Length: 387
Image 1 (tube, one colour):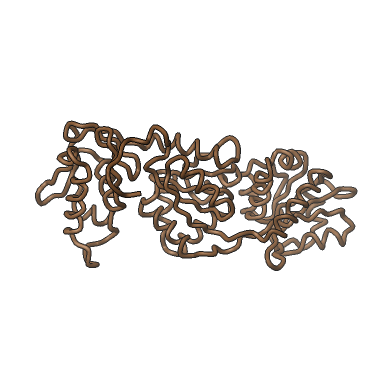
Image 2 (cartoon, helix red, strand yellow):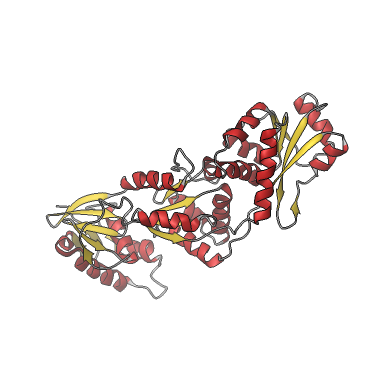
């Protein structure tokens, strides 16, 4: 989107100037279209692969069966399975029927991590089963007050081959004569394009996107795992929710975001892409910076600088440098810090202060009459001088 200067269009497009990362595979192109329509530049970087249709259809059918014939006991066996089940129900038109079933059942989690995930999803638990269940019937009898005549739903995981809990609860309960409904939640598959996923993680860490969107919990956890694998999770977690806005389409992924350490998330009331774009626009509007440079008003909207009502699109380096200065107007920022923040360079990797000088000169020309407000402080660095 970098380029010359044109007439103002921000009033018609609430997300103009902003770049938004998309972590989803399913529905990613739909999101990209909706974001473009709102003026944003989408950055696609799916962190998970597509779900096998047969597994998704089997989960939908199992959920419909549970809603039609509600169990009196529900056993959640994994974090990903519990989150994925609720997320799938949201995506099929709303999770209210499933949540109503869960509210009326005795819900038990297997393992402390699953219990924490269930609590984050707003589910009331009766108790926790150990990961190694020797006698499923006896353990559940103790927690539920007895399974005689009960119908028990057990959430498991499914993949290209069956992914079972450590001890097969389903087989143990069936052998004990219990009426069991197995709900197999498809496990996330690896990203089809790992390099696109890596580029998204890097764009988040380097502040080259203003926001990133997630539609399901497995995307949040996959993003965290990949960032950690590439040694970037600590930096990513620092900026996510603060410098980079995090938007979740569904409430089920908000709990996952919170559990991995993302402090702030925006979410629409209805789990729809259009609604998410609306709340994202409202949130990013609070990141717009208005100041006066060289006696003219300047509005900064992501990669767009509106100078006295005219639009100047910034390159990635120009944008990052200008925003680094704009966050501390009037304060001097040293060349070494700009190298570190904008180029992620320590100065000994072939990138030197000349790169800063060249970018500052280009940025002044891009800002036109407002460029005089970008001041060089000899032997110290640069600053924005409002006024």
